[in-house]
Length: 296
Length: 224
Image 1 (cartoon, chains in turn red, cyan):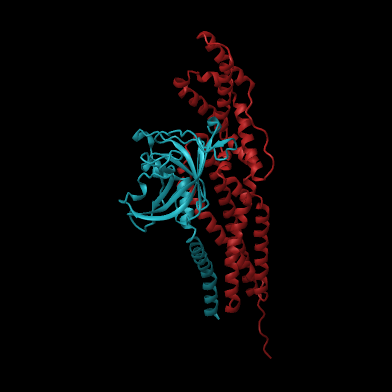
Image 2 (cartoon, rainbow over the protein chains, first blue to last red):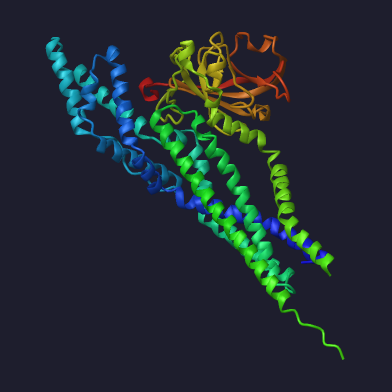
């Protein structure tokens, strides 16, 4: 490593290796964690169905004074299992759109809810001497449709429908569908750079351990420090969407991904330190068995 | 020999620090150009750090779902639904801006933290006259200066969709009311502050857009 002709090229290649290692780590975390199953698990583990149920209850309570329909008409017919199923369905449909495949039908049909609304309207009409005619049937249909829309808006905890409407999903799909290619390309880049290091330091092969160790350590530090900042300052609590279920879903997801990326970076840094230790041991052994000159 | 050994050890120890400094320098240099856009996106997503609290002022800020992909019947004549103060009543979209911008009716610091604002003394799309929309330059209108003459700007509401074409790029002082006054022709005026290094800006930039297409939704309930 002493010659400048080997030091400078090795330094440059190692700098590139730092960024490729960070890219590989980020791409791997992204691919493993961004999936319908993972997001459904996060939503389920954080009680999204319970939060959505209480938000719906609150919504219909607040509208009682203008609609005269008690919240219990809706909430007594809704179950948390129904809500949980539709949260999962919204997530699956969001990913279906990212993958450009057909969405599952999600019309929020709930016979019990429809019956509860219909019974209430008919009872109200009877008590107030309204005719049970086409106008009443139309009002019942509108109320059922409106209830389904409200439930749908609340169950979309990751706001995939809103993102789809604002063309964000179609833009994200371009990156999402190439995620495995991204990992492969980044990993291939790491291998190629290591090969280049081996070529540059062919006379002192152990130096490759040193350069790879330095790169892994620096990559670990550069990846870990921003994650520590985000986690310790509770940066994600500044998330601007205030619907409780959306806020919780997004902040927990972002925190989970940040922790996962930080773990990978810490592991990378540790691997770097290990490589440097191995290099130190190997070079000290080489020096201790250096041949002595024979004098004639 | 021992001096060589010391130099070699020093180089071995210094190299990781040199690499760290170089990497930080490269990252800083690479992020200079997209820094404004990243900061804008982060400000939009994590605006709550501004600690706007609508309960303190009594303002009720109402975000609404606005239909942008209405496929039903439309007409060039129709009824405008007058929005309420603090209500999101439209979405503005144009190629120059990275994402669609929610438009709130009314103005004020609090509303500007949630989206673009259409002043309550301006017209609303479809009613005729000058519809004036403004937003902060470090959030929703960060890329407003990328608008060019001929660009299309669309305002989607729940009663119709209105397409405008940029006819004039404008620049004016903050006390100049020339571009925010009411007009006889149907137009959309969008503006924001000019970017300043320190302090508030006294000048504004934006665009005047002429109405090219009106599409009122025939079945209003489709847009709700």
